[in-house]
Length: 164
Image (tube, rainbow, N blue to C red; front, side, top):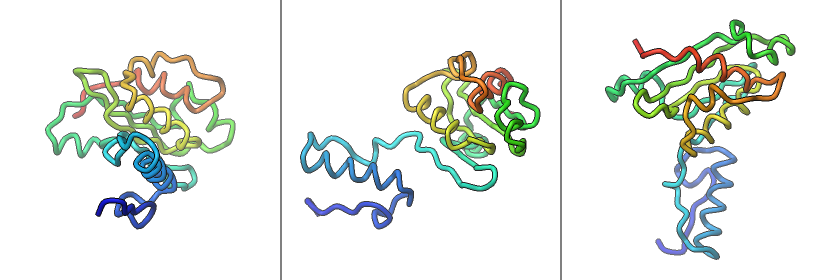
């Protein structure tokens, strides 16, 4: 019905605070802006489950890629084995892993799972890269602050290989 908006948890979409904020931006644009923003603008929306350590995801999983018949490159590494990721070691929590899926034809990130200290921050960077068309090679070759969890992208993405 024109002029009636459902926002937040009642809109039938994902029930996250940041989705409610985006609902607000869409309604505001519909009422006072150009009216061009919609929920279809939501690409590469990350999620985080705040466990210890946090579990964050964005995009598709390897299982989903296989079900679609998509060829993918995969990089997976346990946090404890990532030399270029000192922050979890400093904090004494080296549980978890990082897994990134990349399109072999375009070098674009298709999805990622980060189960680690600071995963909620790392996944935001990966989601931004996905929305902006930043390649996995650019993330792999990035210069990141030290000590940070983002540094893991250098080492993890250097290990890309075809999905088995």
